[in-house]
Image (cartoon, rainbow, N blue to C red; front, side):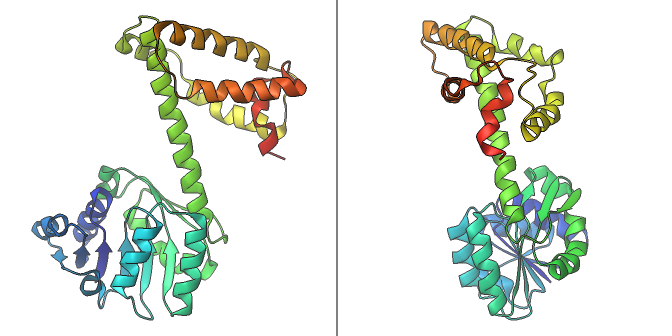
Length: 281
């Protein structure tokens, strides 16, 4: 029997997928109605995390943050021999502390965060990350592989999966904020949002990510494809358009501040990826 603690959007998707794969699943959620809805799919809902987890061979935790994970696991009171798989996005320090604490109690705790939406969890697609003790990862991976489209093992560092989840989410935030700033700038210049979006029918900046990161890692700044000073000039033009229209941009001012600092250090003639120079040494 498998227990799922936390049946929000992702937890509900995981539960339905596990049920379709023929597993018996016990569920619990702080808002009991969310867990009870899954009884129509064949799950058994419980009023307490401890009752849901009792006698489970493995416990999947899908919660909001470190505090929630710690509180729910304390309430669930897993016993020696049980496996806890935590899919929550949490801090690296929290993962290290929980791994050590539960190991001392005879319980295997493995952090396995995901890059998934609710439909991915339901369809067993998307990406799941694991890391840590080699024997634990080897033993648990066959149990997790059916829950995801791709299971990525990031090595023996216990908190690597947590770190990479935060890295990925930061990139998604920056990407989304960049899109929002682009639409804000379009509004400032009188370009309808739908028209602005057609830019990506012809222009795919995603294909340049690998090359940009490689240039940063190689510190290959001295033969620029776009000089930092020229990029800063363009940022100034963008900010002027937004200011003239009275529209605030969220991301561009922070980028401009970083550009100014690096230009002041003497790198205006270098490739604009030099803004990463302090972080790759």
